[in-house]
Length: 260
Image 1: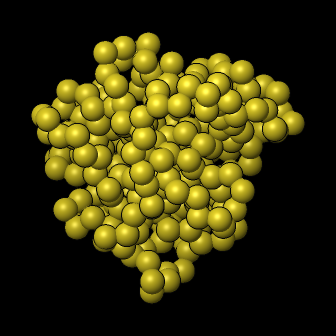
Image 2: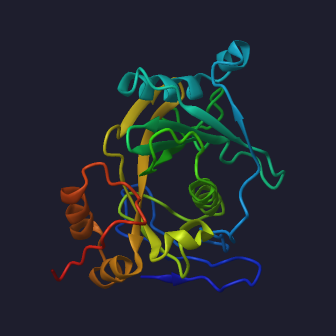
C-alpha cells in the first residue's frame, strides 16, 4: 500500500510512503498529516555547532545523550564528532535536537539525537527510551572536509518531523519522493530512502530504556520503483550491501536493479 500525499507549492516535494511489513506491537500506518522529506534548495533547519564536551553540568542532566555519545565513542574512540544542534521551532514539544557528525575516512557518519529521551525519563514505557530509535546515515566525505553537507541535515530533520507528525517509520519501510534528496540538485536521481538496521550498532541500553539505530539509505528513482513493485526492499538492500557493507548514501554511485 502506498499513501500519496498531495503536493504543496511552497515545498520541493512530498513523499509517497510505503508502510512495509507490520511490526508486532506497532501498527504500520501512513501519515496523518503531510510532511516534507525534502526541502527546497537553500532551506535548512536552523543549526549551531557546539562541542559536546563544552558543558559538563548540562551533560549530567542528559544521560541519554551521554549514552549515545559513549556507545559510538567505543566504536570510534579516536574520532571527535561535530555536534550540530537544531534550533527549537516552537511548533511542538519534543522533536529532533541535533546530529552527531563523525568525520571518518571516506565518509560522514550522522547520528541523530532527540527522538529518544535525552534527559530524565518521562514516558510510561520503562523498557523503551522515547520513540525507541534514532536515525543514522552515512554519506561520502572528502579528505579534510569538516563541513557537514546541509542537504543531509535537511533530510534527517524532515524525516524526524514526518515521524512526529504521525507517520509510522520503521525498519523495512521505504519512502519515495519526486525530487533529489534534501532538495539538492547535485543529488540527481537519488530521490528515495529505505530504512534498515544500522550496519554497526543496532541497539543499545540507556538509563531510559533501549534505543535502536535505524539507518537511512538513499535509493535512485529506478531502485525505488523496483522496491515498490516488489513490495519489499530486502532483495535490493542485499545487493547494495554486497557492493558496500556500510551502505553509504552516495548520489554518485551506480544504480543496481533487481532484474540484473
